[in-house]
Image (cartoon, rainbow, N blue to C red; front, top):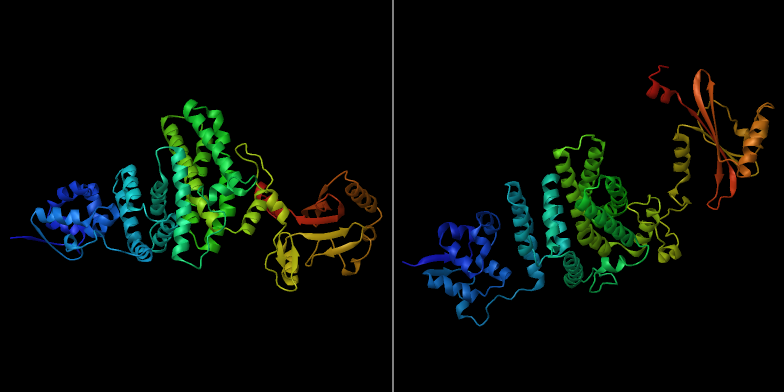
Length: 505
């Protein structure tokens, strides 16, 4: 009696019904079917016709072989030997939708295999084969879906290592080339599927990220140079295990801080791409924290060295993920104005890994891009506030604040109870008139020193009403260094005494 084989059933079900199918399908080119884990994961979602399409194996060849082994075929694809075409036509849009339908379940299957202790490299190899035709951005979306469904972050972090396998090659050059090609192809496919989502200009055979990374001073140029410097340090340490290199390697924390402050939040908040911030950001913190802990430990025994090698391997893998996953995603989404802003904000970070800051002329010439301002707001380089907000902010700062302009005139006192009384009537009067004769010479000398660049700050500690007070006088200068006034700050320091000395009020 013929064995009925329903091609609409999953590979898992069919191999359970007919175990001999494993060897038959393996001979036809479905080599992964011999692995039990694959049959119990991907096999539960894959049919033979779908697998044939993924592996580019003609259905005529498959159906003929199955019939030769005594199977009677029913379901989709069973009539293929009598058809003119050897595969079913499917539009790109349909294929993309179909892929999206199963993607999250497939990724969960990979996580389960990792959780069961399967070798990471084996999972990576299967991942590359199964996701060869899927955009990097789609895989990132699948990670976000897993998080939204409640998959623990630690689980998705493990998937992050598998995710990077999409671009793996035999050599560093091949991996980079593969990444650049994939970025370009991904953008083109996205444009075809979504006519309303324009691909940014500058896409070429090297990829958007590669193009931006060659612009001197561009954020990706600097971040890439830092990665190159870190790679060289890690290679030197591997070769000589020179402990003197570790402090320099730990400067990756500055590199990670720039990603955490300037890239991850923008991707997540504006573009809804939460994968990097939820996964890679946490890995950054773990690498930085582990290096810090290891640096504090005095005994460098075998266990210490094993931990060090492990964290340095993670740092090396993060370089790869940034260059081939994070940076291309940023390049494909961020606007020119956003890159200008990232460039300007990057200036606030210390130099790291020996990479000096370079000027991005394009951003310098672009000037500051104004943010959305509501009518009546006060606009400052650091943002914009309503008068109500600014007043409340200055009144909330736990200090007595006085500003005296360059003409020695009182211009501003914040409100609230004060140890040193400042009547509102003193506004617009000369500052010296507010001090008793014995104090006036000191005030004049301080302001004269500020005006003539002899000093920038004077601090005076004193007791007032039985409490320790700190009075600071600071020179206020414009960006060019020109003196524009003096600010006086008075702060009650009893809280510091209590904290550091354990004194009671």
